[in-house]
Length: 199
Image 1 (cartoon, rainbow, N blue to C red):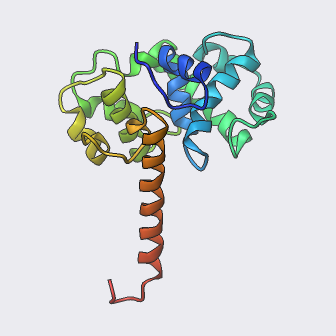
Image 2 (spheres, one colour):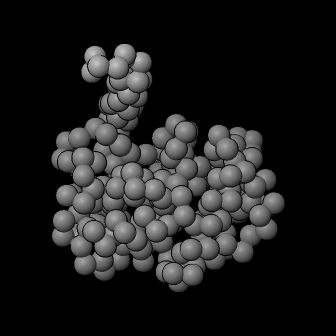
């Protein structure tokens, strides 16, 4: 079992470390929302559902309005609680339909990194970038290292990188990842603002 340090408190990190579904949901919520709050949200969701471990089957079968209310809080589990409650339920249903409700079955026994990336990319809410980041997180911190995983993860798989949640192991690395993201955002903004022909 990995020992992850992605959330703002020990209880949230403990759940992420032992519950693959919680980790997958944290990754799903990691967009337009602070990293540590996104990965802290599965613990809040479990508390509101009154469970110790999240269940894809139970989430899939949950009344959508009830799930939406759990996401709304307070505190809200995401900046967009309604759409993220719906997306979480879609993810849970996909896991039930394709993987017998087991999140870890997505990456268990994959023959190579390319297969794992394809499986992740087929999950609701997981685009190409998110799939690569989660692949890197599995490889760097969870011991899921099918052949070619680093190459398949691209820049996110590089050893010593500070590009994503895959590289966060403590508050210092969280700050480094945040700084890298802000620098990339600023560079993109500058490139957009530059007059044509000056780049």
